[in-house]
Image (cartoon, rainbow, N blue to C red; front, side, top):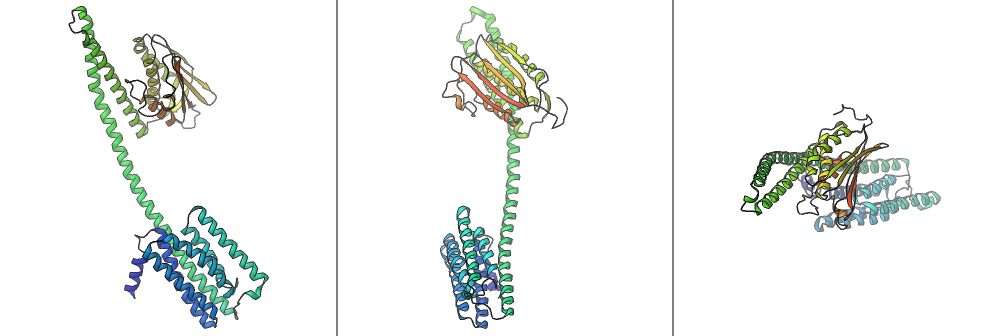
Length: 431
């Protein structure tokens, strides 16, 4: 007997089987057992029709169990079970087995629950609603026309039928719930393991980006300084220089070095966001003014002037490093596309938000490129990295802000973003 039960378990209830398959097998095995028991009770009570219906139910359950096992067409078997057994045979058994003075109402509850276990979405709702409508209707018919019901002759028979049906169907439903929650716990455990693994991988990636970026900054700085020194030496040599193209080549080299330096800065920004940058109460007014001051000499190389309109007392909850980097990127972008003109940085409070704008009167952005400027790698100039605006948007959104851009070719560009003001809801000291 133990070998037989072990064989049944491995064949029909193995954990390797899909969840709904195991539930269906539980129902089918339970259906065979329940139907057989009820058929025996039908013989004992002398009800030939009840015995026949229960034997038919046992045969049908066995057949569906074998068919599903051989063909793997479980969805078809689910549908046949619901239509033939729950919607057609259950009402016949209801009228032949005492109506609502029997254990059949328990079977109705199980049928509806099983339908939701087996099917999904609208299909489950439609079939469950149909079952409820059929079961409600036959109960009303049994009440209005009691002669349609083959009632039990003795109270003891009613009690036995209710106890048997309730006990067996509750056990079957309990088995379904047990399998369901065990599978859920297994999946949750695997999900936790995968999340832990992904967290470790992400941390390793972030550490690699940060380390690589820091290592790259030093040689880039050295190369940039040496190129600038060579440029200065060439300027001092003047007309004695025999290779006039050298200055142009050095200028191109310096441009590429700065481009790579901006890419390294972008990598550090991404790494900082991935790690969860330290955030605290930050004086945005002081931060933006300091950032603007550091750019005045750089902008002077293209004869640009940076005008600022920064209100006092602008305070946010955020990362000073990331917000400074965002403002820096926007100013440098404007500088790249503007020459001998004015670039403006404004930051003002508007209710519960701080509105920031960096605008220029430069070359502008082509209309076909404008919808994609915040995408990674998108750039309108060969010297661009395609990371500036992408990183700025990530920084702003990580501070619960919004960012958008307005631009017309030949007229200029204005990049706007908003940040929520600090209202003391987070705590922390001013940075």
